[in-house]
Image 1: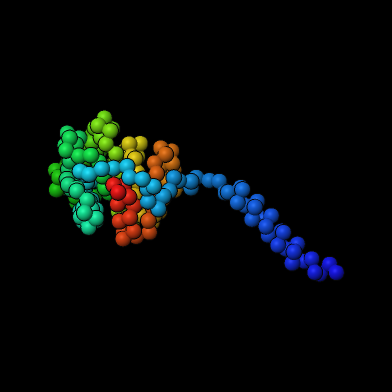
Image 2: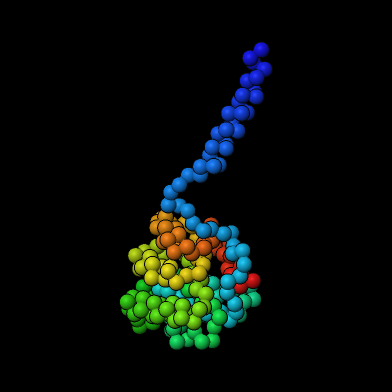
Length: 198
């Protein structure tokens, strides 16, 4: 007689386990305000795309913006004084030693330039979008320092989720309540980037 109640008891136990785990989600430092893409646009055209670190990925993002028919200017060495023509600022993260050689700037000069740019964007109330297209390939101390200087000014972050130290990025984004979209490959950038403006 007891055997006919076994399936029913197993179902009740499974249900209780599911209820327990769904009401007590695991805690930890991996929480992030993540979206597949933004629920509503935060930026407007005209858009300035610039580089933080002079990596070549800025040109890739410009190509993506062209394919989305967004009105953008790619100015890798833009200054804070150049923002008067724009409604949104997109900063492509990535330190490149060879890229900096062509600008006749040191890393400290680049850091100062980008700090002034985000400060001016704040004053002008322009949305700042951080984009990291290279992921682990540009994962170095200089790129992290650039990120740390800008994250407090960011309105949105789009990046590849292949970094070895992704947890550090997630913690910083979470500390400043910056919504983020992390994607697996470069082709997946189109949708979240488009959602910033449309």
